[in-house]
Length: 245
Image (tube, rainbow, N blue to C red; front, side):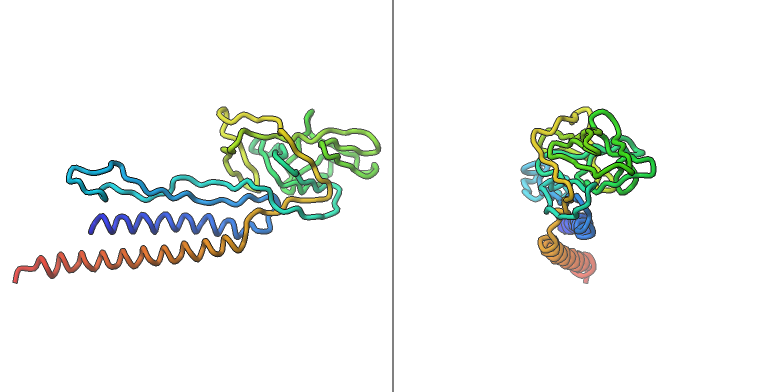
């Protein structure tokens, strides 16, 4: 009975963690470049059998790992010259106040000094450094290969970075990611096309996430009922069956 209570509690704890992931996905349905995450739940036995040959001894249910779904999100047309979407593999390289980060969010603008920046003010990096434009010059063109052209002059080339697959990146704030260096070195993207005037939408599927949330809640309720049943059985065993008449 004690093992049953322990298993039910482990299941409820893991399902709460799963609900947190789903809630995070739903909260970022409209976040540009957001990548939804999920939870691998692993049930295993430390040993095939214990000394009493009980196959259920030492069984644990726990979170194996949180994974990120890096599939490309939908294309959204904005017609803004400084909005850029990556079609294919790779990430924009951004210099934040916490160091270099990587993102699929190409919602850029110019700061008062003319530098190309993200929505939080972090500078977008080119292959040779930061990208600075003259706000009084002509229209900005961003070519498919990343060259930034203004007044018929190439100002810089967007630095599109990539990593070995499957990705093993750490999620940071504002749709940023960072690699687990030195085991995950920065590589050149093997293939991409940049689309000026477009943004990549969130790849979080609201319907699938809502279905997963309902399913997780029902499983949580089932574990809760199992826990209550185990507690009632244990109470009877201690206070009724074990009573000397």
